[in-house]
Image (cartoon, rainbow, N blue to C red; front, side):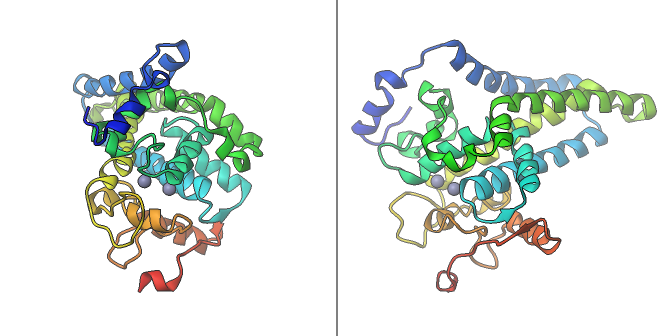
Length: 297
Ligand SMILES: [Zn+2]
Ligand SMILES: [Zn+2]
């Protein structure tokens, strides 16, 4: 682990930060480890056109659920939608297995509050690996920052998803097993099976989306370009923006977090904003917030 300053190293090694393997901590980190190890099962179950297609669709839903749902809607309220709309997009985010919406949003708002300062839990100043995923293994990351999500706690359905999100993931895996088995029977020549679909859509897809989303915390605070005088180390990173449906324009986002659009220039591809525009045209979302025109100039 590389620490950029002695102060940072002291914080990370503080007693409350040292790993304590309580049952709650294990319940938090064991699925992370098992999901990564489970990716190797791809070589056991093989692949099929059907499995890879459902893998891409699932990944897109998970990515949109986190980056547009958890992030742009819940954490920053950068657009409006109906309560059922909010539930559905949050459900998509829950499917990504990145803990519940209240936990995710609390930690993300905390990150914006203390970006790259001593209190920032996942600054790359503590090491690139730490910012990418190491911080998730710290007991310090387990408690939800309830003080920062009082606005979301008023929705019982969001509290429900926060508490029982794993039911969504397990239920989806069972559904995928059923779909894969049905496909195997109906289309015996396609080399599809229930186990194959579970590995591709519940394991591999979840892990791929993990690393895409985590890249905003790690690479987008270390590698890329800057154009505003923000006090953090945030960067705009073209590759990460492609991997995150636009959240890689992370420096723009840190400068103006309330914007539903993260790519401020026409060439800054922002898939989420394009999807939100389409959803706005059909009336599912509205009031997409944008930065003042002066910022675009
Ligand atoms: Zn950031
Ligand atoms: Zn944010």
